[in-house]
Image 1: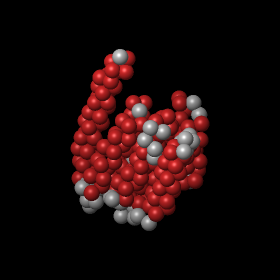
Image 2: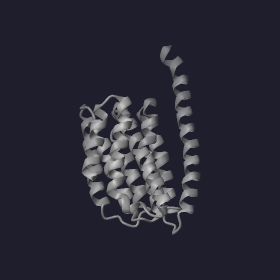
Image 3: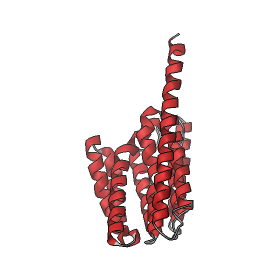
Image 4: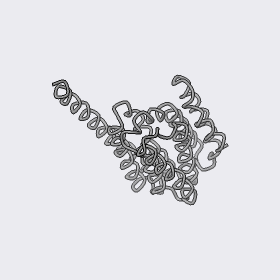
Length: 237
């Protein structure tokens, strides 16, 4: 089912935006089915994790294609965001062997896109990046190995590229900074609540880090908007 999920995610950017979220949800469902035993117990916690994973997959399919227009502004930043998400998951899950494959794929994407932008070519297609997000998501959830705290940390780590996609309309620089904020938050959650034996500390860490990252994201977006407004009169003059 992992292969099916990645193929479906790769198709999502080729569709109209209003269909992407639905296709992303379908891909997330296939991904969840593949890692179902690793989502922990009891059943209520497992279903909550599954619903969150499907929602994140839907958001990724909808927002990550926005990265493409901003990719040329800071070469390789969107792949660096994926590497950061993988690092956040890696820092908190007990099973990590699968991340070697992830590092190779995402690292190759970063190098390839940086080179393509440097020589004046278009960045890699959105389909490639969305599928790579799916690979990171699979590795993160598979690595949780049923431990509730690790599942929470893994899911939180996957937010960084999605948050950057939401901010991508503000430009590549803003999106890259937003991704950096959420990557740092993801690593913090992984190294505090994500490595705990119980699930509750991870949930608390995710809530606190999410609120802090949300405030920082707002500050980045507002500062960028003010900078553009301040620069506009100078450009007009």
